[in-house]
Image (cartoon, rainbow, N blue to C red):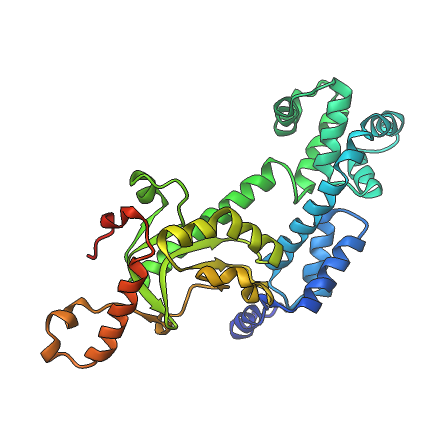
Length: 333
């Protein structure tokens, strides 16, 4: 007789998934990934179910993606030399196996299946433009070799690191968490401009949301929030500071970056954050937010707590001094 799962226990187990990882645990995850022989999709399954079941699953997926990207970038020059050899292996064995031959080869050669397909297609059809190869990967039925076409199709659905399916999934996840950020911000009573609003104003590099009126988070003035559907390791966080966050701080003042799938414990300790960056793993709690009470300032004699409101106003005024010349566009509601 089947049992109905205990929803309370299920919810508790989800909450116990850890998002902030120590240096030791992060290194153990990376060592497992770099020592694993097989498909990345199988490695991810092992990470999630057997070896690190108490860690946020998406954090493990992001760490896997980062480690494999670094590994493939280091071996890129070797892969360019292997196409001819791999094509010969495929041609010699294609009649001995079913449509999973390329999957088997990817395991043996420690390659992503889609990367292997790209090398074989480039060598077989002498394709030099990446767009031509991508066309065959997106539409395997265009390949005149039916057996190769079936193998390529099998690789496309078995690769969780490359390919059009994986790219679509990542884009959907990113958009989902941007929408989540805006929804939570509205529920918290925050008024903001989004990226489209800021671009209409003439800004080129824009955070996901820019506050119309700044607020305080645990005593720090917050002018913007950036959403990352990713895991915040130290190297990736430094890259984000260089490419995005530094310009946000220069133009708008201090802000928050949210790594929805967690971060390395050393990420929040980086001296690079001292320019005004707060790192979080979730949207800030409403009780940690302090907003300017405009009604209290208009009627100070009738409203209690005016000293607190005045101190908030002073901090917010100071934060406005570091904003760009376009600050006259940002007016309180």
